[in-house]
Length: 175
Image (cartoon, rainbow, N blue to C red; front, side):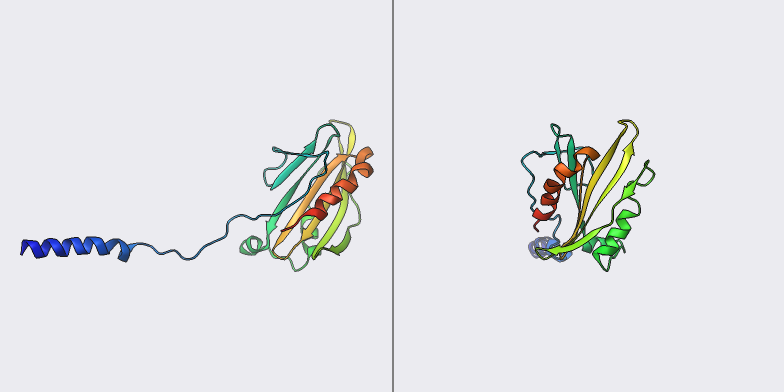
């Protein structure tokens, strides 16, 4: 009797973990891989924006920038849906640089290239501490599953010199 009770107990112990263990609900992809090319004068950095996927700077030229990615699926989970890139632009632009002296926003330019939708614009404000105008090149990009915000800045006197390089960063994004 003791032997059969012992065998029954061993069998129950062997079966129990399989019976009561939680099963995987399916694999979930975490994170997003995308590619971007930086101009030769830029190098990667940190500390500019904690939400950025990549940050870059040129101390020599006094220019910098970063890219923030927003997953459409995660925005949907947060009940923040955009029907178009223009809607995403309006949501972003209304709060961008608000409260800063002499804030200006240029007229946005919309276009399509490489299967993506783009809206780009310039924004500027007066930095009181430096007593100079800071200019941002902003490009919002819509791919199939993501929105990207490319934000690059320089002083206003350098904006025309570095804008082509900033635009090339935006156009180089591949996912």
